[in-house]
Amino acid sequence: MNYVRQDTRGEARMSTVRDALWSGVDQTRERSESVLSRLFEGDRMLVVLTVGPAVALMTISAAIPVVWALYLSMHEAGALDPNWTWIGFGNYLSLFGSSMYWEAFRASFVFGFGSVGLQLVVGLVTALLLTRKFRGVILTRALVFLPYLIPTVVVGMIFRLMMNEQFGIINIVATDVGIIDEGIAFLGEPSLAMPSLIVLNSWKFSIFITMMVLARLQSIPDSFYEAATMNGAGPLRKFRDITYPQIRGVLLLVVLLRGVWMFNKFDIIWIVTGGGPGRTTETLPVRIYRVAFINFDLGMAGAISGTLFAFLGLAAIVYFAGFKPAEEVQR
Image (cartoon, rainbow, N blue to C red; front, side):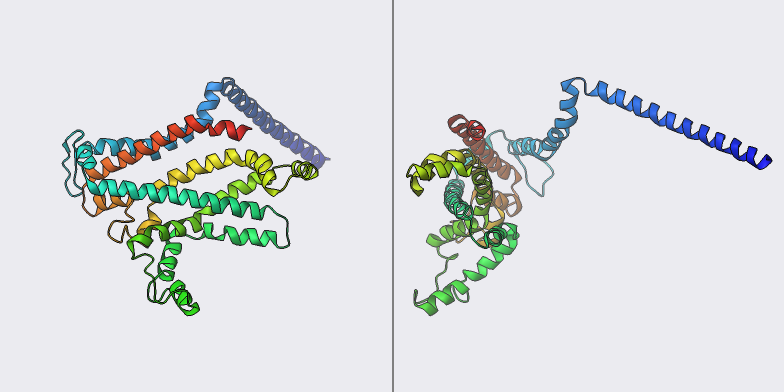
């Protein structure tokens, strides 16, 4: 009987402890819910907690470096000299009078617009082909997306070997077939270096446009095309009246994104040609690298960066004002 009474008392104490613990947990949860409800009562706190970290990250990673580069461009600053000398717009005045700067600007213009144009055509045609239903379409899509997954340095080094004048596979095959009599210096000939670079760059990055357009194409209802077929519309008319209006917003968006990225492209140009032969493929990003890390003129490099930033910003303003891509995407 004593053992029974002791067990009963022990169970009662354990029950009391459990009740106290659960009561404490409930109180803590209620206080937490009360605090969270007060925090998220107003939209201002919700915006701060959700958008604030992203804004802080963009400020640290983008805004501060841009401001620092613009401030640097107002100085005569060497990479090996800790003393900066304020010269105002002196670097910009020297820059605008430099033929090498305008050659680099022209190269950026040709590379940027050439790459975006070719990528747009290749990406759109590839997306239209991949949207069709045929045996092995999933495997085909995976193989088509493969170039986008290969690191840029690998693509650059492989194509440098493939386009070599003496032992490149392209020249060997073309010579054996009889298309050419002797090897062609694709990357060593000034008239061929930039087109070769544009083709190489587009081979890798056209897939981005393919992915964006293909995703939009797959959201178009099949009933649209079935109705057009019943009305006697052919492939071209279907594309004009159904496909193009549906993908126009995506095309405008990818043109902006690819345009900004291509004008800022550095890695594949530096790996494949290094800006050569001569300065035929020396774009503004390559020019900035040469001035900053080979000539050690940080002030002038900052000035070139400032002009590139101003050009892209102005182009983006004109683009958004003229084409209104946000409205097109919402349609």
